[in-house]
Image 1 (tube, helix red, strand yellow):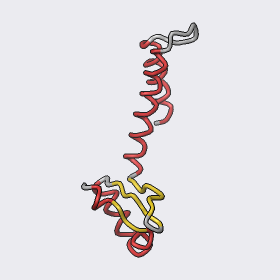
Image 2 (cartoon, rainbow, N blue to C red):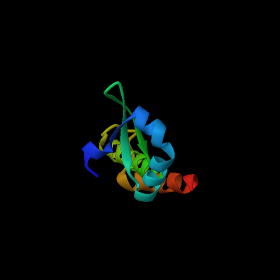
Image 3 (cartoon, rainbow, N blue to C red):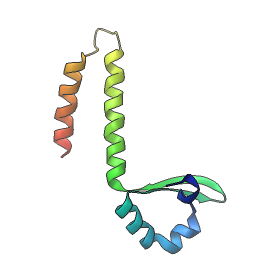
Image 4 (cartoon, one colour):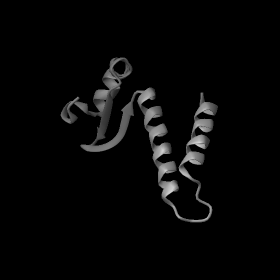
Length: 90
């Protein structure tokens, strides 16, 4: 989706909420909602949001493995912990 197609005003969202939600869920789209011409919020499919959060968690854990402090875990321990946490979310 082009960014120009993904930007919608809050009045458009109000008038077309049901259709937008159906489209977002069907195609896993993300919209930028504007108010007074300024971007204010993102509306996206919950599955896309969850994937993004999981990716961010993995990136944070990878960044922690680069830490040279005495409390830093190795990459194997980090991924073992990550797998356990992801299983607990399911």
